[in-house]
Length: 232
Image (cartoon, rainbow, N blue to C red; front, side, top):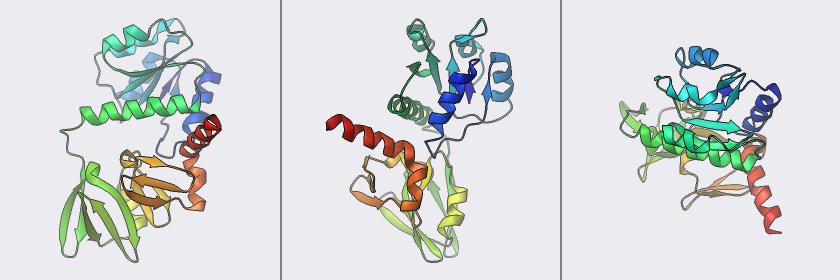
């Protein structure tokens, strides 16, 4: 969710976020009051909060006393950076205008902080193996591989054969955590250790990136391109 009263800034951020396949934008709102209505009525995983909102101070939202997901502050000025961190609910502070690689870092920090907060919460799925159902914690799943009418789930250093096709399983796993990178592979983005234009590594495991899936992974691949240019 984006909270920003400057339309051009909000649309710029929206454009950058569209390059990340695991990010689904709920909406854009220009006021704290409208934002609170959305936050209290539906599940929000992340908030981008501008500091100056038509005379209102964006940090007011952090003091509302409502449960908030990770918040990334966006501002053209660094003045409120210290205060936002002291309140304790800001995952990062982005100075406008920020490039794609800086946004990527902020998203990483935000979701890492959320993972730490939710460590003890139940976050799992039951999948059918033969005649029994096996429980899998989302965080334990490294990746999923198509195997004909079945699917192989790689989790906790073991391989499990599931009685479902990959397409069906893909619909059941949270999209903010799992992305399809190949017709035969679905990966947990939290397990990515490195990548280039053609391959993603999950530790020592090498996962190919399908050509038709590359446009959806533009955010990750553009960061790799930027790294190559800087090292040239």
